[in-house]
Length: 327
Image (cartoon, rainbow, N blue to C red; front, top):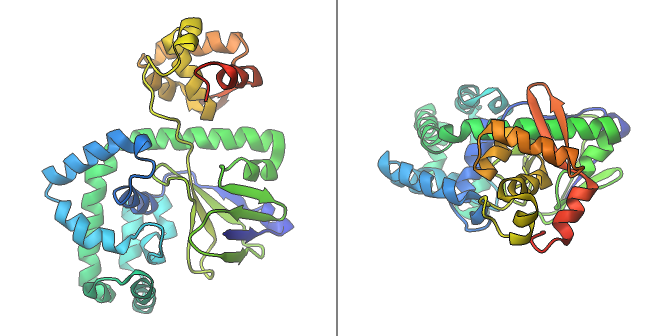
């Protein structure tokens, strides 16, 4: 179990990342390649990623160079996910290159003791070796993450809109309560369970940076070094992949397949574009359907900047929960 201990000051310093963290997304997408856990949520990405890695000749680089540095459900070096990654891929990779020799050596040693790092990992203290690593990370990002950046960005904006809504109605503690099924707010402690190890982090006025992640699945991740600024990478909600002819004939018959798909998408919060994608319709058509669902009292819509987030009302949730096709 991982436990973050908050003070009153820490509650005023909870922030949510404004952009995807490029290096964290690389790290946890590499985790997705190492397990079938959550494969249903990443099936289309997994297939296109594997094809892209084969086409670009990166399969061997990923297998022998990247995966050993990012073992799933285990320790991996903190310097590979620097805070500068929030500013974009280039800034994050520059920070990796600029990591002091001593820190690289220490964290590679921890990796070796945790999972048995390959012998060449010790050479990451050399700038030339880190330049090779940065080149591999950049090529990997270009092949399997960059093609999906628009969708990832859209989901992050929807998540921020969800948090803005919660903050307005329930404050910071309400936001902490709604981060996900493996995260529990038990004032003044935020608990993450299950977690690979048992650790207590006392924030002591530093606050906490929350980083929503597209590729993080089920278990949130924190930095291993307690001396670094505290962050918590946590998974965005992943609704099951569904088609307009999804798994609920009675609900489809009642609402029509497109509106039923949009209602299901709203169960975890959905923008109009996401709802359109789930329903297989254009955004304009999705806007019409969301208006009908909103007028029927099944969803509510909230605008945040240029994004409209659609979420279920209690009536809409009850319809999904009690209907034959409800989850």
